[in-house]
Figure 1 (cartoon, helix red, strand yellow):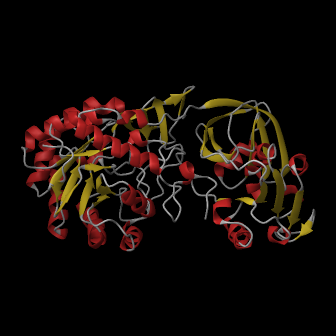
Figure 2 (cartoon, one colour; figure 1 turned 60 degrees about the horizontal axis):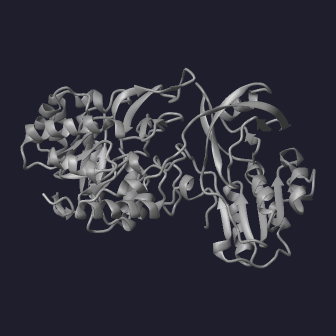
Figure 3 (cartoon, one colour; figure 1 turned 90 degrees about the horizontal axis):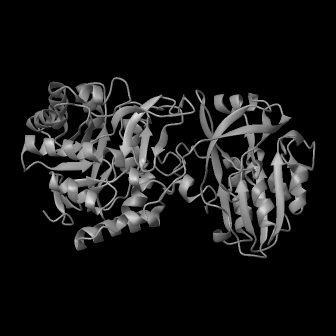
Length: 537
């Protein structure tokens, strides 16, 4: 087999690469965007979809326990089959790709229900019989060859679509299970899912809120290779296998090909990459396979997911639900970046870096985690990781307008502090009352400040839009605050500046911070943790 040639799957011949389920392309808008930019991805694998919406586990859901090796317990987060079918129905995907919908259920009837709901929108199905950390699903079903055969048979019978069965490496008889799936009508096998579950702790505290999770990355390559070899020996040469597990470079792909893989999934290795970097990496993999080289691994990105313990040195409760927490930590963050704060046993959430030296966070109470963080006192500690996201830069001697609302004000202070060194900075702040205008006097040290409050307790009475008169044409704008505020100011800013100078940070749900889970994807398919948080509209 020539690895770079197109291979038959269902009724299509496609390039033999995919990104495994649950990684990067978990939202349809992102799937569309990535598919159009990376022609090497012949199989487009969706996140695993169930019959009903599922919130999944609380953060942390993803951690790095050593370079290139990860543990995750996302918890099968998904919008439910009906909602996902609606999103897929309007998707514009390249015709030369095979859309493989990963699905899960508790039994054969639930698998069939999901498959029937999605069948008009997809080319085939991946049966997730291998998730190692969701009770009642995945690996608990996938270790019983008779149950695997039953589920496979029913989905094939009811849909007529090609079915690929994703198997768990935890099964001692994975070859027999694969053979039973093929006998029941599966067109092919996917191997492997993550290994485990495993356990990872920091200072004696389990990092994952779920406590245990599936292991992925370079450490599981030997397991993946053994499983694919055992499957190939059991099912013969004619059945396709989508091989995955720790692949990082062309030599890994060659190794999987030698033991019998037909297609190749690359997942955890893609951590931290933006779209151009992803496209360059897959092009390099293809070139390596064509030329007998092994250079693509040089394009992989190291990421910092280490948790550092920080001590609260100063805490200012400026309102009943809002505080400023100053720690003894130093991040080296660029303006616009963010960090995750983690309290073991409670969870973690992302926060804008209000100041980097010392690390300072503005915390508005929105839920369980922020309430717990705000309940900490001076002398208490918590953990941080990061910084993440793209830093903000402007041309020297520019006119810069910072527009902040509510808790979004905290995301602008470091911009004012650093951009004012070479540019003229005007800051416009708005909140419901004076107690929610954070660092008012501190902002004044970096340029003029204008304020509006809904109750008129400080500055003008009204909204931030009341302040947006007589601004300099061609200014850079950086907006940080509620979506309603951003929607209101964008038309006003567009009248006096070009789109490439207007940036906004919208509060999308960032869960991993390193581009893997894609929970923070916007409508254009951009991952805000990688491409933002400040992005053009």
